[in-house]
Image (tube, rainbow, N blue to C red):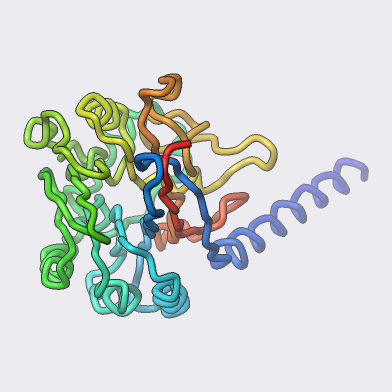
Length: 306
C-alpha cells in the first residue's frame, strides 16, 4: 500500500511537472535585460536586441505577436542568431513576428533549423557524448525536409540586415562604426573560420556572431580581438534542475555559461571578451517543453567600460 501511494505521488508530481512545462512555461515569454560595459569609457549607451531560436510554425501566432511587440523597445540594433524556422511554410510567420524590427539596423546568421525541418528525436540523445550527437544529427538531416532558408535570407537582406554567414561586415549606428564577423552554424560544421580570420577591423565596437557557441569559434573570435560575442542554440538547457541549472548545452560550452552574460575565456581577466548566449524563444515542435528555463529575448545595454 505504501509503495502504491509513493508511486501515485511520483506519477502525480511528474504529471504536474509536464503540465507546467508544456502548458505554461513554454509560453511564458520574457524579456531579460543586461548592462554590458564593453564600450570605450564615456561612450553613449547602445541598445542591442538579441533574438534567437524562434522555431516558428504557421500556428505560433502568440509567439509571433509577442516578438512583434519588442519593437516598442526601440533598440539601436537587432542581432538574430538563427533557428527562426520550424516548418516549410513559416517564412511569412517569421516576417510577421519581426515586422517593424526589420526596419531597424540588424545582423543575422542561420542555424540548423533554418536549413532542415524538425524531426522526432529521443530526448535522451542529448545526454550522449557530443560526437555521437553530431553523428546522429548528420543521419537525421540527410532525410530531413529542406526549409526555405534562401527565401528568408533574401527577405532579411532586402530589409538591410547584414548577412554574416562566414563573412565580415560593418554597420554605422548612431554615428559609431560596428565591425562584425560571423560564421555559419558550427553545430553542423559549416563554420569557415579561415574566411573571417584576422584581427578585427578598427571600430567603436567589434562583434562576433554564431548560432552555436562552440569553443573553437569563440576562441577564434577572442583571438582576433572581438569584444562582444553573441550566440544562441542552447535553449538555456531547456530542461533544467531548479537550484542547479542546465544538464546539457548541446555543444561544447560549459553548462555554467549556457545562457546569459559571461566572459570568454571563462578565466580571462581584463582581456576576456563579453559574451551573451540566448536561451531563445522556442523549441522543436516535437519537444514543446521547458522547465526552469523560460523562453526569452534579451535587451543588452552596452555601456562604457567602468
